Image (cartoon, rainbow, N blue to C red):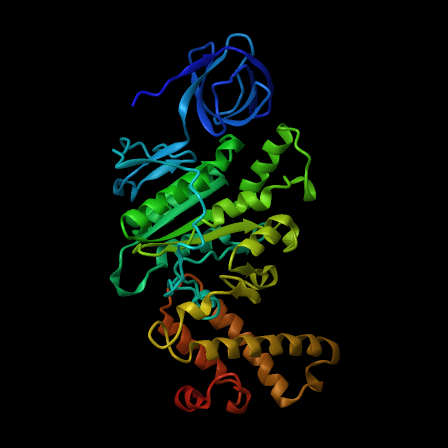
Length: 457
């Protein structure tokens, strides 16, 4: 079917990444346009708003060089789409879905709109079975379940990128089922882009990975497209080809900053800390695309990574993400300063769907109890540390000193695993080893039959 195109040479104003076009009555919200400069250069744009005969167009490649006299726009008659196929695996794309690895373009099996819809709650299937990341603090204590949304809350300078690369390298599902990874990066530097590409290629994970990379020097507006392109590719692999897909998006803070920049250019009334009042809804349209669908074999699991400004977990980006998603993995600056990697702070971390992915036939029948006991003992150990700082170690009881030793060993051995790839069996065995520092009478959160069988203290 041939699409009708309309041409307008009536640009009346430019503001940041936006241009204002008068009389574009044939346009519709979300429609893609082509911006033609007087030099012959063509750029992509999208209609962001229609009001009283005025179209607000966001230009993906930036507005530098566009003039209001000779530049014109051509309406394309379709919304933003990307071509998808199994040939995407092993390829790198830019932020709006075009090949960026110097290889020939893919031959798409389909062209899909990137603005997909959140999964209908009535069609959702319950998340089940865990995804092994090889990281003990996630697999053992905050298990990631297929179809879950589990963000990582990082801080400036913390190794979130290294953890993301490690998860891409190590993640696997049980039973040899088809497993793919979609990686979306927003606003990263050239050094970070090189790090990710090198890490994927060296580990061999690149063959099962689709990567969308938006660079820091790319226009901010492109960052709004990157997570949607990534999730569109993930939905195709999961619900059309039956893959279990793990989507990693970094950094959602860069995405929200771009959202604030566009809102400012549109002269919208700002909400908390200058972010748009609709940011919760906008984030939900991204996060809620993860999950499982009844009758479909595959699943989309989402790990968004965000940087908390000033390590503030109450910041709007972290706050709203926590409301929408099903838990969080929080990185700790004190642990990072101790040289512990990955510096996951166990106490504020949480996986609300953990119980759906663990148990007798999925991991181990004692998994829930062991995780609760490790958490409880570490919380008590942290309290004991604070007490020791006040009264000195000489004023502690023998049991208090055991808890201090537990905390040190837990952080150094269980949390601080370095680049090691641990199976769930290795993680749980290590948990029993560290719990054995305490007397068996302290293990009140594990059933007695399991304590008798696995306790070695």
